[in-house]
Length: 359
Picture 1 (cartoon, one colour):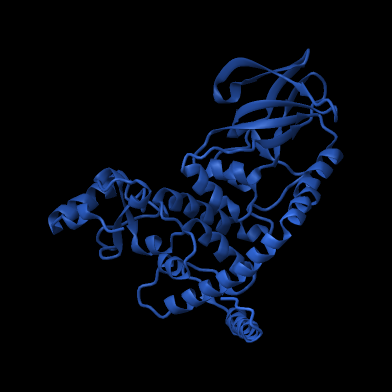
Picture 2: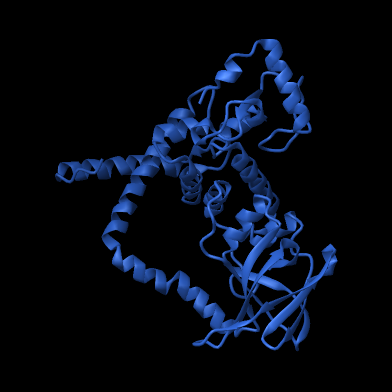
């Protein structure tokens, strides 16, 4: 959305604002965090709203940021703060590329943000756990209750820990972070609460132990919060669990139990699947058209394909996984993507001839 404030500035006033933002941002782009040179990058910099006007942001200097034009065009969020966070995530993904296809994991995020450094000192006594955090200078002793599930018999406790004491699980669910990290970053940046607490486990030998707290469920949620700068996170931690049972339970939660929900909404899901094929087609058409322009921007693709901004990242990731587009600041169609468009039109033509309108 255009800025009336920026439009009112003359060249001297705009230059002065650029210089103030340049200094305030420590001479770095607000989105990618890389260096800005006011001389070398002259003509390739923009001033934009951090929080969009459409989401209640104010049209004033406190809500402005100085960014590279290329970063601003390729960002996948209307909110610059979220764009900055996702740029940092993309940088971590690039660094992890050589580690194999199962990265990045929560462990990679924690390592990048000074997490997963210390084991937790705790004492178990009379249905309670006492612990302290001397490694970070917190010497207070905190005592919390241990709960026992009536049916499974498993024990667990609820705790809020600094990320320095939180580790990636390597036994139950050591999976690659998914594309919904972006959606979660968007959600949490809008001050929406997490509705499900993340789960961890720990094993102790005796009543006094120094042990790791390992997250096995809700890893994307933890990653999103860490990316947004959270330093302390709430967890439910299973104490000395049977890991085989915990593994089976966690697996069922993402397979068998989800199948029940699928069966109840099969017709609705089939319709959504068909709609997604159309979304893919609209995005491929928009990407193809945008590739012919001199000034390219993903925001133009989003608008032309008429998809929500917070879903664009997900759709782009899916198209990449399907090898329909190539990765890049402005994705390009592959041969497979071009073939998809041809075959899609054939299907639409067939359905129309059969009197089954699809568009």
